[in-house]
Amino acid sequence: MKNCLSLIVSLALFAAPLTTTAFAQAGNLANPAALTEKAPASYKAKFDTSKGVFVVDVKRDLAPNGADRFYNLVKNGFYDNVRFFRVIPDFMVQFGISGDPKLSASWRNARIKDDPVKQSNKRGFITYATSGPDSRTTQVFISFRDNGMLDGQGFSPFGQVVSGMDVVDALYNGYGQCAPRGKGPDQARLQMEGNDYLAKEFPKMDYIKKATIEN
Image 1 (cartoon, rainbow, N blue to C red):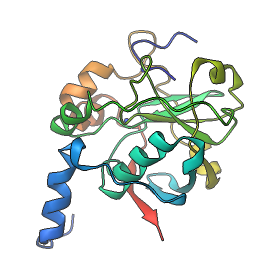
Image 2 (image 1 turned 90 degrees about the vertical axis):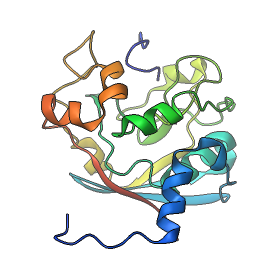
Image 3 (image 1 turned 60 degrees about the horizontal axis):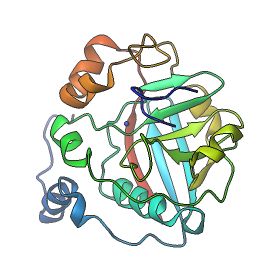
Image 4 (image 1 turned 60 degrees about the vertical axis):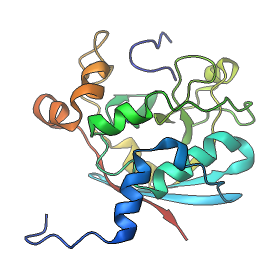
C-alpha cells in the first residue's frame, strides 16, 4: 500500500503528574533510533478506538523488521490519538501518521528494510504502507478484503486482526481516498499540521484512543 500521494492501484479536570517513566517514554518516542527493541515471537496489540476495540495478533516470523517496528511504536504510544485518515470501502483502512507534527517529522525518514512476503494480504491482515523499496516507517493498513494483488508488489503482512474486525469494518469511510485523487485529507498537510487539520476539515474521522501491547 503506497502512501496517499503515490498509490496507483497514520481530560480529566486535574491531570495526573507525569512520572519519570512517562517522560522517558515521551523522549524516546521522538528519537526513532532509541526504539529498536526486538519484539517477542508473538504478541497482541490492542487498539481502543472511537468505534470500539480491535486486537491485532503479530507473528514476528512473518516479517521481523515490521513486527519489531510495530512493537516499539505501540509500546511507546505512537498510535495514541492517531486518525484513520484513509478508509476505502472494499479495499483497506490506513493509519499511522502522528497527530503531532513534531513526531511526524521525527519518524518521516526512519525507514526500515523490507521483509520478504510470507503471508498473503488477506482480509484482516495488517501491512505497512510504502513509497518504494525499504521505505516503511509508521503507516500501516488493514485489508477489508483479500488483496492478493499486493503480494507481488512486496507488501508483507506481519499480523492479523483476531478480534474486533467488525469494528474495523465500521470505521468512517465517507472521506475515501486522499487528496488530490479523492475527498480525503492531503497527506502533506497532515504531516505538517497534524490533528488540528483533521479535526477542522474531517470531523467525522475515527481515531485510536489508545494502543497497548497485551500481556
